[in-house]
Every structure is written in C-alpha cells, then in structure tokens.
Length: 490
Image (cartoon, rainbow, N blue to C red):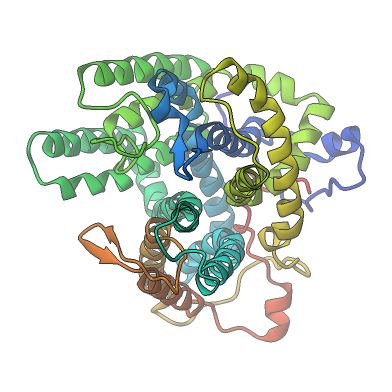
C-alpha cells in the first residue's frame, strides 16, 4: 500500500445495475479505496448480526439479552463492536466530501451549511421514514389498548416501542461527528496526529474525574471525545498515514490497553451496553471502548494490503458495490425484522432454546436466514427513502450564498437535531402514551423529543440557499455521498 492518498474520480458515477463484474471493476476509479467501502457496509452488517445474536424474548414476555444471560459470551463484543470502524470510515468520507466541496463552492460563506445540510439529509431521509412507520405502529398499539395494563403482552408492546428506536443513537452521534467534521479537518491539516492524541488524553482525564468521585454528568463529554477521536483517525487514513505497520501497533496497543482496563476495572467486559449494569462502556463511552476502537481500527489498517488484493477481484468488488446502497436501510430495519419474527414465533407457540445451549447455537443459522428474508422485504420497501431523488445533473459550482447567517444557523440546527434524535432513541415512539423517561438532567416525553427533532430539522431547512428553480434542478451537492470516495458505483 502506498502512503499517498488516492485521487477521487471526477467523472460520472458508473451504474452497477445490469453490469457484469468486469464492467463494474473497469468503471471504478483506479485510486478508489475499496477497503474503506467494504468496511462501511461490512461494519453495519456485523452490527445487524450481533443484534440478532443478542436479543431474545423470554417465555414471560421480557426482552432479554443473551450477553446478560450468559456472561461468558461478552468477550465476543471485543470483535463484534465495530461502530469504531464506521466512524473511522466516516472520517475518510468526510475528508473527501470536504475537499470536493472546497473545489465546488465559490466562497466560504454558506459552505459549512451546505456540508451539514447534505450530510444531515443523507441520514435523516431514511430515519424519517423509519420514525413515521414506528410512530404509526405506536398509535395503533395505543388506540387498540395493546400498550395498556400490566399484562405480559402490554409490557412487551411498550418495551418494543422503546427498544427498537434505540438504534437511532448512532444516527444522532454520527450527525454530531458530521457537524464537527469541517472544524476537525482544519485542526488535522494544521496539527496532524496531535489532534487524536489530545482527544485521547482528554478522554482519559474525563474518565479519571468520573470514576474518581467527580460528577457523573461529566462523563457525557465522552460522547464527543471518544467518537471524534475515532473519526479523526479517518483523516489520518485518508492521508495514507495509517500504514500496515502503524495499524499493527495500534491493534496490539489498543487491545492490550483495553484488556488492562477491563482487568483492573471499573470497566465491564462487554463493549456494548447491557441492561442492569452499573457501568456501561457505551453510554457514555469509556476509555476502554476507545482503546478497543483503536485496536479494531488498527486491525483494519494492518489488513489493508490483503484486503486490496481480495477486493481487486471483480466478483468480490461487485458484491460490495451491490450491497453498499442497502446497508443503512438494513441497519434501520433489522431490529424491526427481529421483533416481527420473534413475536410471530411466540404467537405460533414456537419456543426458543435456552441461550448458549447446543440447540440455541444450531438454530441461529436458521433464524438468521428467516431474519434476512424479513429484513430484505423491509429494505425493498424502504430503500427508496435512503436513495432520495436523483439529480438532473451537476454544475461546476454551488449557488452563491449572500446571507451571513446560514452557517451559524446550521451549527445550531445540527445541535438541536442531535439532541432530538438522542431523545427519541431514549424515550421511544409511543407519542400517545407519552411516558416520560430520564434524559441527561430530567424526564423527557416522546412528544417533547419529537418536538425538538422537528425544530432542528426545520432550522436545517431554513439554511437552504436562495436560488432559481432552474439552478436548483441542475446543481448537485457532491458531498451527498456517504461512501468514502467520490464516483461511487451504483
């Protein structure tokens, strides 16, 4: 692997539908980082499989977690916790997108708003479809009386309306990383690796204060420090600084540090949040999770040359190209597929084997096939919201922004939207039930959470530039691409 960064393609994006593997391979820009593409789609797939493996419904109607029932399975999260890889690749993607926007936007004014708006739209478009569907389910469940009372069925319905939307925490945190990306890129261009080291040091200080008797609330700073540190690694990757040798050192150092922290405490073994645990490595994230993230990102960097050789095979690359457009939609709907399947099995009287027994392990592949089929149906229905409208073309530059306030307003909009999404992920979607749940400093209801989210998206829409209808039809913001390089095959 060379240490110079690949040049993104500026040509038209080759389409994959109906093309052979050889044609897709030939249409892909030679400098494209195929391994980064694979990591993006693959990390979400691992999250899906991990959730399918962990979540279960007990005989009395409780939603349970296999890692709680069998603590011996918790070390699996040391390799199944792959969200750090998505933030790593997000840094790569944002580096390319910001470089492209710098070339195409005629003046600095309005550039930040354009970037945040495009990234937020890319995330919120499929998220809105997901929330509309689940709010509808919540309304039906409430009006039918399904969520009322203390029966096992009512409790299970209420739990489902809170559990399934919890995956939106990732959308909120990633949106926050997007909002910080322009600033973090400028810091990277000036200070390089020192930005990552500073974030890591700050995270260590926060954990020392938190676990040393300081206020518990200070731990929430880790949501920014930990995930931005992993996101910042993407800028180093983009510049070719994460060589295989550096990656191997990161892998050894990261995992060794994680093992030491887990062994000494107070950090739990699991790198995902578990119900009932006194300390979670995820909410808020801890230095132990940061160490694990550095380790798994190091593994990805160390495997880069081998992965490049494998992905150079046309058939392998075609699989990545075909799967990538569906990854986000599958992520949003995989827990829905899981709940539908488990409830259907429960209604049919099919009992699940005890967790971690031989029968449980033997039936997982069968269950995964069923879940894959149900998820595929949901993806086919909802993927249109992920893709969004097609652009009529691309102009050489973006529209000229004459107003002074869109950039600061975009920052405020991103902040409000960020909190709105996190609130919804905590309190759930039962609008009519409107049960309050504690969030940060006080109780929040679903109605308040959705009000904050709608306020944020409204502020974001207000940052759109004033442009003629013809200009709006032909201008296309090239940052609206969640993959690490431009010229994504479709």
